[in-house]
Length: 304
Length: 306
Image (cartoon, rainbow over all chains, first blue to last red; front, side, top):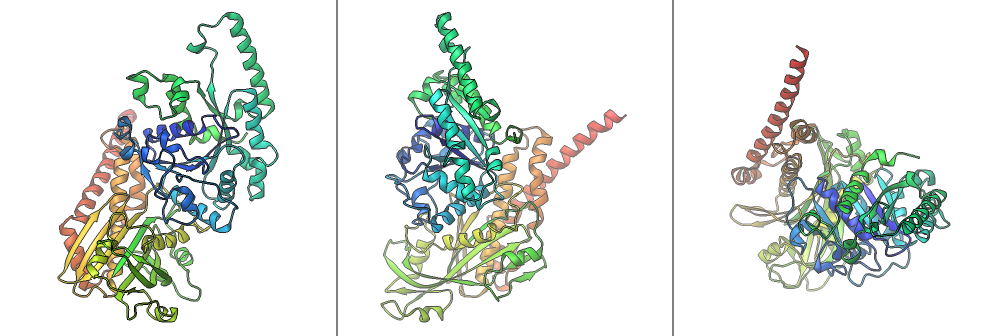
């Protein structure tokens, strides 16, 4: 199954959240891989603590593979090559966890050529052959990478593909996320251009709210009652807004609470971070675990 | 002789019939796909040529240029496994510069070295862990053939389990018979053969057969590892082992199409590392586990029925 991670704006925590989802999924026993299609700024190596590929690889990553310059994109086995000690021991029952980084220096593509598209179809098809879950991290906004992914998946009708739209729980982000999917030149528009059925494609899109401040969270414990009431009103307004923009609960796959660790250190959160050093919140890990289950659970993706 | 075979699981929910294999492998118009039914269903595409002019990897790192054609074919075994296989015979060129393509086209599957090179140096280079970029990559050629078959719209892409392809690189040099098989990272295997007649037509078939069985063994080990028998509940582990029983156990047919003169290579690998021994032990483990799981279920039902 191919999962595409998109967001309208930068700073939504798209890469770090999708990275944590694949990490949790592999702990749950699936063979998973993470493919960096954020060609402009390939930084996903940092999330998985691969210093060699912190800003992309020099050994032929996704960008050079798509251009036909290397026969196979550089592949990094996280369980073997991560610099974080906690990640270098594969727990019993865990599946493969593989990273396909972008290229250092990266750069975008000028146009969508037939050769490029074929190469992309080949890549998706090969990865789907090997992995239970293939997470493709696309750049923010209406990017070339998203175009390419839509064109390629249109040619792979037999391969399951799903789209995750990451957005923060704010007015601007809700409107932007809705526009990215339903707006002009949005995901559904461009998908239809490449031969996707818009209604069917819409059924394969879900939203993930990031950095959400829950009403009952410990962070809000010190607030005055008037402040809490005001926050409550804001939250209700946002819920109404999101429902109007078709980004409401029914189309939401899950939400990730605000966690200082995610803000300051954009990395995988291990159980150790919660239990031993206690720097991360248990709720954050639970949210990732939940997302990792739902992302492959057909019940969560039933047509609306 | 050098070659590389890529082996993978056909992206289809069930076994495909011979007629579909034939359709998938019709890669050259007007040429027939050969189909064999005994002792196991096997269909193979006509040979195709790819022209190359590139560096050849060498163990010493010397820059060697080769020009010629790569001979490739795709095959489907048991309606379940797909292989892409490419080979070249590297020979000393007659000239120090590139000749007209008609010269190379008349020698299918031959790559001529332009300049000087030693056979052992080239064989060593071909079985390096990471051959230098931009050198002849037979794996990339073989992978394309597998891709062509896998991308057919006639396959439903609902494979019963996910499994990585294996890459089986081989070299055959003249000399006293010797076999060296190594398992490397990223599902790469290298086989260095020395044979009295390394150019015999059956050598590539032998390597394809070995690659196929190496994939089967690798896949079964992986399925058992994922199922974690002994660590998770019996019915759960049994359910995870079931795809092995449904889809791959019956495909083990060592040396099905290997010429008599080359059987000794298989025999030597049976002796060490002992392919069939390991396979049989895994098969027994899978069957025993499933049997015990079934007995447990049946036993439970029996009591509740009484």
